[in-house]
Image (tube, rainbow, N blue to C red):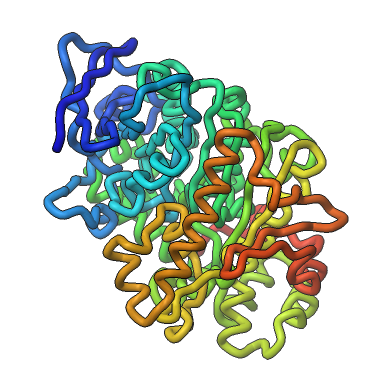
Length: 511
């Protein structure tokens, strides 16, 4: 049974729905539509409205390939469009005795795909189990969100950098101003995200404009070392213009007048060129622009310049196993691994590959590529941040039998099944057809208890010790759950000193 629910705040009134024990508002604008003269500009304040605004439907997804906007919800469709700066709020319907903790989710998708309308990101179980207010955020993607075109600004047209990241900051500012009207506590906001969302979290921790906008952070499978250098991003923007059929003289006209479809096609070609020439290096993502992101996030963590809030960070057991089959581009084969080390640190190759028994066989190469992209950079963040703020490291190991049989194991994004308690949802039922549903329920309950306890108290449950550089205590989410000290020590030692694509490696060959 559903009924309407109306909330009034600074911008106006929004009409959502009450369904059972949950209150839902969808498609709430947090910034002005970045269209027309606002394309490729920093987000601007939303214009307040009079009357009631319908907040029962999801807003547009960011401009992207149509395959990225499948929602998995029966009868729910969203379209990709530039007018995409909206968020969703989900809250318990029960009486508010005191403001509830707020959890703000940033979706993944390689900074090129994704939408908050995906059924996986619903958040209902988190809200019920943790008595929290859940917010999910859309932000600009691809060339419209993450290429740096500042050098093509002229006397009449200005381009800004790090637009998708700026969008996330604008959404967090909206939360600070308005979430109290929805029962949330603006003084207790936890940001969390997976993959590109996890990288967004670690980057926001190093973004001065985000200081004070959140009190805790959870980074799931981030790739923090792939935040791009200014020189690489500038080179990519020039190659992008060539692919668009433009040059420096026609850049403004091409960038302001080109259709989203044309920009998307050029971006796809740029991504393919870059991943071919520098495996694991992606042209779309935050950039160290000297402004929004003053220094590389890892440097910010190591010097104590990152925001000193409690942090949960971790990765999955076999991050790389997903990519050769579905999302090719990481250094998960000997040929790509050779090119990756040649472009970054040739002297490290023999030392690192020796830490993967059986290399160059397929499994060892895949695990090396996953560790390069996700595990080792996350560990670097954890050990650096632990010197300045409470830090908690985890590894997600649980995989239903079907994922083990098919060789995926606990690969990239499998943790989302637990974070959003999907054991009895369609995707969970499919992945547990060969067994493992009870185990997934158990792990989901454990992860959700830890996540929501962290959101409420700024620390996980007492069963999870803080990370430090002596014991390196790491929570292993599996059946049974356990804590291990310094897991995969040999691999960690082999990677020590390796910095990846943090220097200005050649961004891409000519198209």
